[in-house]
Image (cartoon, rainbow, N blue to C red):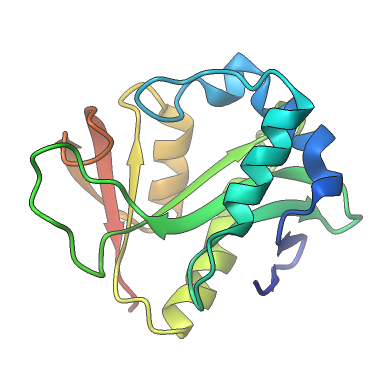
Length: 175
């Protein structure tokens, strides 16, 4: 998987050496509380290693799951660009059912890293031919909704189309 850069950040593949950071990141309820229909904190280094293996398994020329690091190499979070799971009973999605998402360590909140990382990933993905991307946020996740707006994503309202849960839906296509 490729790396993606921005002015202050590097998005790179996850390595086993990143397990301690991932465990620290995802063992925090304030970080995972909006992730998935049934959020849960990560408990062990083995869980982190298994999660890193799943992240590396996304083998695609456009999509991926990246570790976000600051310019000095310090890990700050996670960014994903991958197929989005449809809720039960939804018709099969097409190739445009790709989501972007992020979660950052609390030490990195409020520094503009989520927006900057997402901008870099979207620029790369649209440049490689991705036609559309969606983002879904928990209705209470106002911080991620603000990132979606800063990215220029269009708010489409609430939907239960994905993840078997109600979300605020945003979308974006290349200019």
